[in-house]
Length: 145
Image 1 (cartoon, one colour):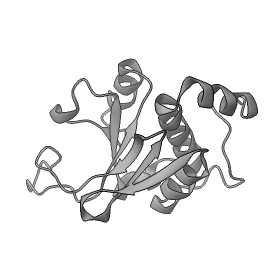
Image 2 (tube, one colour):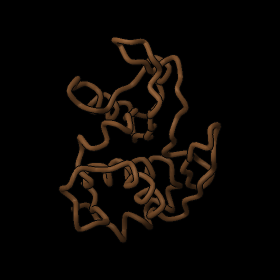
Image 3 (cartoon, helix red, strand yellow):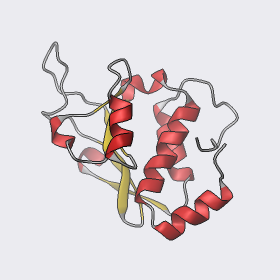
């Protein structure tokens, strides 16, 4: 578990926290994809991005595409499976992301996790994409709690 960057760790997370926490990581740049959705990158590699509605992420009852999917890279497939295995968890995946080291989270469900959990998710996403040098420097200054 990594150290959070805020004193209000236990409050429900908000979408604005995703942006704040991603930008708080070192060497982050922001590109804008289709629909002007932010894509957070480290060293030119995406670690979080906001998707446009896509046919692979739909409401099972209405068939409508989810308009609010956020993609977070994870360290491994084992990490991914641990997060998406519990159906009550807000994290999910789709067949489109089979074999891809990432989990999906709808913006409307961000509040189901604490700001601390979101901070860990963002930090882990960054660590999974940062160079080994950048990751080791960051970890040296931010030891696990």
